[in-house]
Image 1 (cartoon, rainbow, N blue to C red):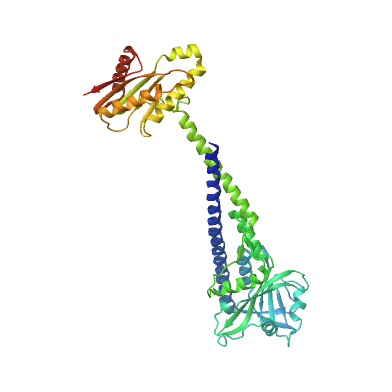
Image 2: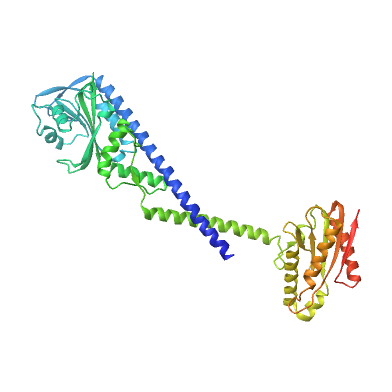
Length: 434
């Protein structure tokens, strides 16, 4: 039994290893699928913002009026595009996107003469005016970030012009950020740049949230800062180039080992429970002393047989009275073992009473073969002593060419057994039934 549970524990461990490995692979695919799906949602939101910005009307905003989140050049007033509602909507969409979520810091649109930001921060006044040539905010940004001014010059699609910079510490706010630059083109020429600033931990937080909801333990690879720029750029551009677009993640060994151990314990626990249920079920129909089926499982059962032996231990009451019940139990157990070793695995052995056993032979066997089997049973018991005692049995057997009800066969075998007992015991009486 101990080795049985050891095998069960080993099998649970091996199965757990493959289960955890498969779960990790499937979860990685689900994580990357979720990442790319939400990148597409961001791209779609930006595309819609681009269309709306092109169709937006102009409004006049005073230089010192920051209520619209607009930073204008040195002129007294400036006509700017009315993007307040569109930026609010884009900000909301990004805020609800699992990739960015609460890590969204700023959304801004940079034009040559002005910048529109949400939220407006006073630090941005100096930030956008620093090193600006002739007050052209857009020109400065295109130069600093090496953004292509024309699609025709490089043969790229709009999404392939997206670039990511970071992590860096923003001047004035001291916030560590990544900036996503999304040029907006009109007739192939850039007319503004959408800037999305996010906290530098945005990808880590995305994975942490996924882990919390999916019982996984993923982390970004060690070069995640460089990776973040490349991943986002390629994902926006959907560039595959012999490599799968998506997050490059690792699985810490300690967490994998813990998952395998937990899975092993769960599987082994289920195995142990199933084995306990199986054993309980067997114990409910198996006689513990003999290891044979119990009589009550068959006494009212409708089944047909053709060959049956009814076996009774001779003078068993005397063995119990003289040597005690402990010795009597040893005799019953050993007689059962010898019967079991003399019959086939497909034959059915039943403990019918205290010292009485029934053997039902499987399938059709001839009269001569049944007679030989009965003699084998007789000699298996009387050829060697049991606990230093000479023990013999008497057998009543019935053979039928056709199947007959078990109860009828038992009554016939019982009459044959009675004849064996009255004829001196340690013998066989075999009846033919036609």
